[in-house]
Image 1: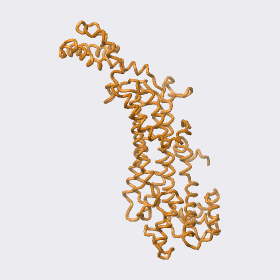
Image 2: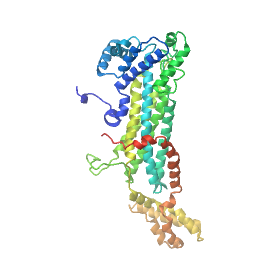
Image 3: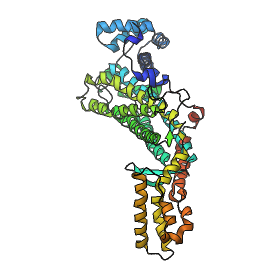
Image 4: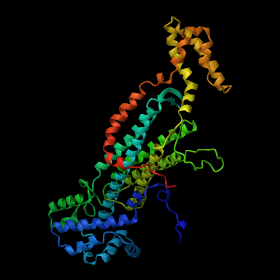
Length: 482
């Protein structure tokens, strides 16, 4: 049967990186189980259990699971209907001197849960620098365009001017929140360790002949070997699924942020003010050859929609764990944990590609400002007239009448906004005719935007990115595979 004859997830064929796919691959999972059994045997021997050094050496030599070992494990699982025991027996065939010592005192969750924690830690370490790269892209962009005026939008209606850099700084701030939340769950991640079948440590207490201190030492050794600061103080048969939910709440929030940013980009593409990268031979539409669809931002939005909704699964899995454990968490976690990280990875690859190649059209931005700015400038004109002793109320009425006339030209006739020309031809406004052009410079309407961008990007953002300097110095822009 060809690979084309069975379903494969597009996350692995189109979107995610090879590094992330490797973390959640079958070989990495099974080999990590073997590594956990090696660490357990090493620690138990160090604490006095009679496990021969030859047995441990043979285990170490066969940590990586071969294709043949997978075949053996598949045969054992068909017989035992138990995946962990199938791999225990397959490992015993590869390391026969250790066959009687593998998995000593452990329950299945010693390997399955500890492995899941190892995978999540590796995956978090993979996405954090990628998120920092996206933030750096936008930091450069925001500082470059911190002074470039553009229309702000409230209710998707033209509002007071901001700058292009100020809008990008808003995107940065939201991504910074994601970065901080993901860093927090990464730093607080602990190990399950060796806790026994219900978290009572009974089997290990028996192995160590009632010496509880050795169980503490055992877990300290295992945590050190696995690279975790400590183990969760309370476990049942599993580590609490609240851990997965905490990780998901942080990682999946990135999906919402990505949707928001790319929705802005898609709207701006419609306005022809900004575009994502568009390659020379890229086709925007199979029917309409002129189109330049924002397909990358649309892809990110779709992936973000899926990611942002995954916490509901993790919530339900946590809610429905009865007492010390039920197995209805197993099948869904096999899908949800890898999918969460593959989605986040895919989003960040595409976001890096988009944010490092944004195309801006300043002339279009200025023409849109020119359509709206005359209305916004009328308040300044009113104030200027007041300095010449003109009644503010009389001036307000004159401006109101001319504004409605200009609005009619725009909305009913499809013309351009000619309010300023009308003001320049109306005798009432003669005292300020010479000032009008200077009153409608867009930079007079952007407030403190440039300083806001500078202070934020060169301050808080730069300080955070300094923690990722090594990876950022080596990073290149992600290229989309398809």
